[in-house]
Image (tube, rainbow, N blue to C red; front, side):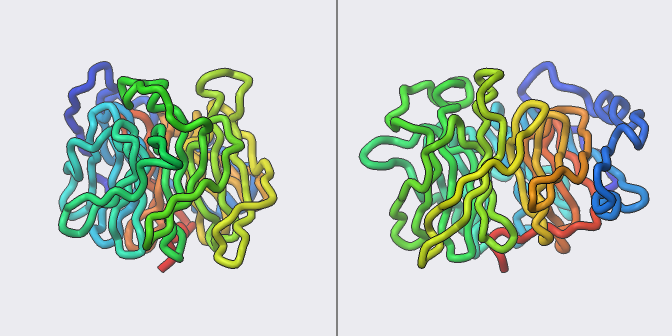
Length: 334
């Protein structure tokens, strides 16, 4: 991944490829990475290298490795598209228009699921390219603006539905919400029956399971609309005979600066969080191991490549990668 791509975009005011790479790589190594625990030094290795994969996006979100295509896809929300990159083909467009897609994930069959901010739905792209609606309403009212999604090993689909699509009509729809609360939902993979699993959030955002699926993590990013509102990650035990309910809510970590956006787990249970200053890494107990600073605010990330040891990071107008001595937890587990 040594090569650098410069991508065109319909948006204005973006950083150039040269400006981003010059502005970031002139940083000293001690400024680029913060190490709070020796385990993070092991994860980074002796000479970590953060590489620019592509830039020129308007806002990079929904970073997701698609194993059966050997490519990473990234939602470019304001440009209403999902872009892709692979070693084989370089940069491309995965889907346009995208319904202003935000979060993406894959299911057990390798199909891509996306949260469409503008269309107020969660959709699944079949292998033939056709689209299936997974969820668009709850108790007679339309969803507000699905944001992020994850799939459990039983095939169930879990997603967040905050009100950003209403608050930001240029990226969503601007229509008054038909749901009384911002919630987290679970969808049965066979019947598509939708159930609310939690509604005690200001603005539920990122969502991910621990590697063993015993814990569900959900970010609350209410601070985007008020400094003293939540900017934390919550953890829930996944319980019940069918492991379809949440219990024991607790604060996993408060995030500074800004808010926790997208995040993923590695096989050791560490959680990798896209945040205001880059990527923040926490152990299962919620203690910070270290940080990888990015030149722009990071919004989402995904482990990728065949060994899941490359972390892809969507940071505002740019996509970055770094090889690690950590292995991402496959989602859903193979």
